Length: 241
Ligand code: CA
Image (cartoon, rainbow, N blue to C red; front, side):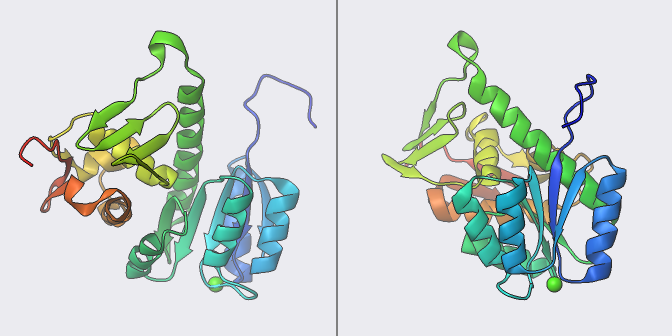
């Protein structure tokens, strides 16, 4: 343990990738950004490294020897919730993964720019910290649950119910729903969702939004989220039901 010097605590990133050059390049770049980095090269090694080091975020390749990134994601998420950035070989692979509900929070398609990877890791960490702060609010500052069209969304407790049954959402799906629920019936653009949920201004990566909305729809009911084609999404108020 280093002495407390008033600087923010260093975060630990677990990098899982069987391609040695990519693994090392990602690790080197994250170390240069002042992260502590733990490296693993296969499925079993990733699960063991996660248990030993309790990383703050995991960068996880999908195709791995031993067992694949999906299985790694499932195993580590049952131990403790940790944000996962999945590295996929093709853009459409991300859609499939979201559909499977493996619990990854974000996806990056190879080849990717290191700068983009660093930004995504930073955004994931900020989201986790923001959620923790909200969770600690008490009294009048604590946001009240929202009830809408058979949905109950408790942003502070990070829990959601559809027609009385609790629904388990990934952190990303939950943040999307909270963002849409803030303005029911109003179309929120994909660019704005990207900026508010992922912390990504600039609007590149709207496909990521579509993938996660698909996952959210599958869990809360597809008729609850309306698509404004080419623009964005709105949470139905149920007024015209
Ligand atoms: Ca691989």
